[in-house]
Amino acid sequence: MSEFSFANLTPDLILDAIESIGIYPESGLLALNSYENRVYQFKADDNYRYVVKFYRPQRWTNEQIHEEHSFSLNLLEAEVPVVAPIVRDGTSLFEYQGYRFTLFPSVGGRQFEMDNLDQLEMLGRYIGRLHSVAGNHVFTHRPTVNTQDYLHHAREAILSSQLLSKYMETPFLTILDQLIDKTEQTYYKTDQIRLHGDCHAGNILWSNDKLLLVDLDDCRQGPAIQDLWMMLNGDRQEKAMQLDTLLCGYEEFQSFDHRQLGLIEPLRAMRMVHYMGWLATRWQDPAFPRNFSWFATDKYWEQQVLALKEQYAVLNEPAIKLIP
Image 1: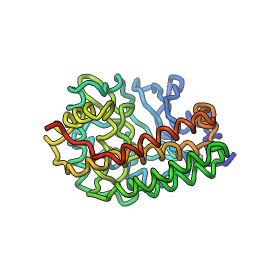
Image 2 (image 1 turned 60 degrees about the horizontal axis):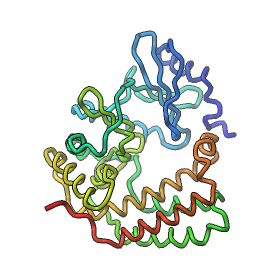
Image 3 (image 1 turned 120 degrees about the horizontal axis):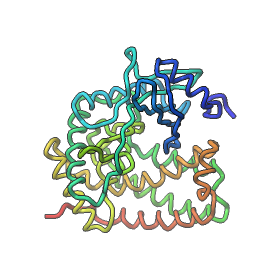
């Protein structure tokens, strides 16, 4: 196991790291649901509850992490409801024995209800406010939303993982390559802004009559629709209603280029392929075979062949339109 893995991140090391910045836990460490990083909640002797996040080694550079933190703090200063890192002694990124970590206030709340149109309109307002701030600057170190990373690098990761059996290789790669070609034909580069990047229901909390946006770990440059389309589910008519509700709130604070509606299904295809590539890339981390054991089964790849075929068919349909 590489020295620069999570293998050496023991409870004692975690506690020592937290104490190295002058915070002294008095409760145990509660592991939170995170696979990319290692995240723990605890109560300190100052009677506050915190969340500490240890970044996956070698994933982001210090400059990229600082851009994430700066963006979060910029949003918080503009009163956009996000959970931003805590700054101590002029910095929010700390290091202890080779591990980089940051501290957040612990926030509670229930999960966002995607089928609640009132909450959806409120979310649209929040994302509109987020994007109005995001457009003031650009990332210079964070990545962009692009087909090379989301499709081609993911394809390479899947093949090099050797988790795809010979039995499934031909049918899977046939539809995957067709999907990649079609996605590249339909995805076009448009105006790019700083994004949350991974704005799904799991990263939105409902607390004290307001929504909170959490986890900007995947923030990047890309089209505005990237922070909206993951809220859409159901049939075409339901998606149109949800989109109309989101944009009703969004456009109170930020104009929206309606041509970007044509990017929704290409972005969905990119996320599907990227997710498989992510699992393949992380397979050497023991947490992944333990929690995603189905990823190494023929049944999973059979299901993905069907899912990719369905998405390929959707890519050949006209783009979704708003309700007149």
